[in-house]
Image 1: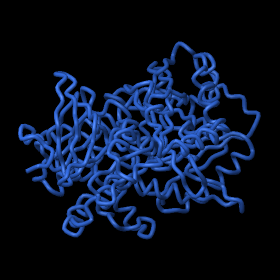
Image 2 (image 1 turned 45 degrees about the vertical axis):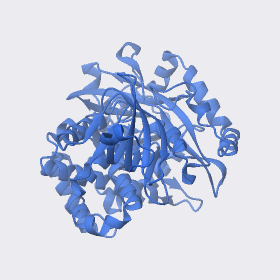
Image 3 (image 1 turned 60 degrees about the vertical axis):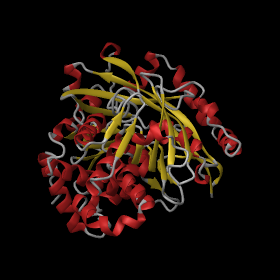
Image 4 (image 1 turned 180 degrees about the horizontal axis):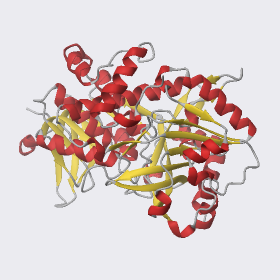
Length: 505
């Protein structure tokens, strides 16, 4: 017998339930189907199709986060040297994603990689003497590292005019300016990739239920997880049970984790940050820019509010995107409720949340100011990047909601965490993914972490297959420079990035 599960609900018993049809569930489902093809997997998604929230191509910047251009992954330490350890970690994680996608393409599990990934230079751009000195030191620390081979530095305005004509045109140069450039960057359409992976999972008999909203999660007496699920079309309530549940609902993951009642989910809060981008589709303007160019975050801005001007490829059309302008909304998802933030405050996390609120008054004030900006004020910020930008060429686009993790750490109560984090039960029967950037880019590494935490008993038998999918699995790329070249060549070929990915000589 199945404990509290009614006989009529037997057909809803499965091995694995994935909540949320975004890039994380798509990745975990695809990996599991390769490792154990006979496991039954059910996906529950409250929206009508896959990849509609954080994974959607218009809800994120599509930067294949390889830490090539994001200045917030490299910090200057008191002795004046540059710590690039976080950049190394993020880059290694992205290489894992590239290997897995290459395996899928080479195995004909997904096709036409150009529909989701394109080669595109990644650049960092700074102004002012101090920032230029920092960028030069960062360049020296990174370019000597085999992971970042091929990076170039220039503080010559003529060279920059070649690299980024749209940004340099009509610019008044009253202070030093410098940029780094690396050709092996990419633009990734995570929405397209998510949809491809779900099409593949459908062919593998994964049961994907759209318009199904998870309301409750509880443990049954026989150790299964029982989910109360509302079918939004019929209004009926179904019960689904599984041995393992993954909560990959983006901003919606925290409330579901809290409902599970696992001790690991206590004392954790969420801080929602909304975003806006400006988008240009005017072909004349779009043709003048071919790169992702990241600047420095303003003082007081959250790390994911680093201003950047990106070339995007969406449905084989090129456009430009500038932002993000951060903002504040109490919703945890774009399609969420105004009561999400309030509803996430529980007796076990109220102190943590209050401490975070007190510590982050300046951040909250900054976010509210950002919400209040007029289009013209946003254009002024854009003109710091494109001096001659015209209002009529740019439209506003609301980006995805992100929910940053708040928890008690060694740094004190209610510390705001920037990054992604896996929270799992001690017995590995349920896991949730919380947090934001670099998110989608590191999906494969993060889902392998879920597998290691939740299925340790299977790792020995699964390892050969994991290594077939990800040749560098379990190996530090940094300690094996030869392997880096091999992987760059292999992934560039499989994903059609050949032209841009030449190792530096």
